[in-house]
Length: 324
Image (tube, rainbow, N blue to C red; front, top):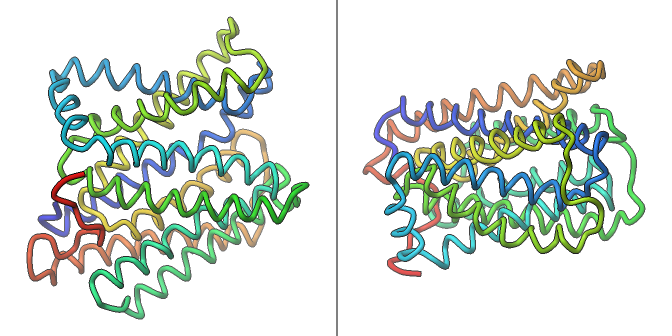
């Protein structure tokens, strides 16, 4: 629950950290595939399985296993829904990249979610967004388009099935919005590590069968590939989603999805540092727009807290049901 402008500011920072970690995942997946011909579903399954192992170890060390069991008993359908939406978003996003290209997948999947959540919050609160808020949203989405079209790895290329890829990207964006809205509902009453462990467990159950059916090697003895897989699990999944859910406790869903536009920015910057790729003038302008938008969103969350009439006035517009 938001209690102060400082809490709102910290929530935005936590979500930005999660987005930065997510942005490193694409390059790490590429590095794994350069060493071992694993399929994307197999790598994703390893990512979630290793994340779950790390999360359960921490939860048990903190003696929070009872909280995990209590969450699964009290909100099983909501946990299942968030886990399925999260896993589904990841699978559909990668499928959209394959069918329609990186640019379409990134812009549509990441750009649609904040729009959907913003509309939902406006309907729930019966209050139109302020002109400042609309300007910040426009700047963030414009920055996303510029960064996505300026990055390498065939960002400008169109995939073999553009129409189907676009439809899949839209579905991914819808699932991302649902996962954020539903996850925010759970996050406000659950420790972040406990919630991340629960939803990650659902993801493992979804992705493990797909990995078995997808072909390619399931195991490797390559130590560098194993280290990269461990990084994917511990940092881009366990740590990132724990930070994301922690931030959702004090941040509106539409704001959270806009802040996560740092993800393609961090991916582009990492590619520039590691692979020597150039972002270009348009990409630099897009980066500046995204960073300016994130700063504006942090200020907007502080203002929402400052003028709130009650303790829940600044929370996302996804009501918590009395029961599942």
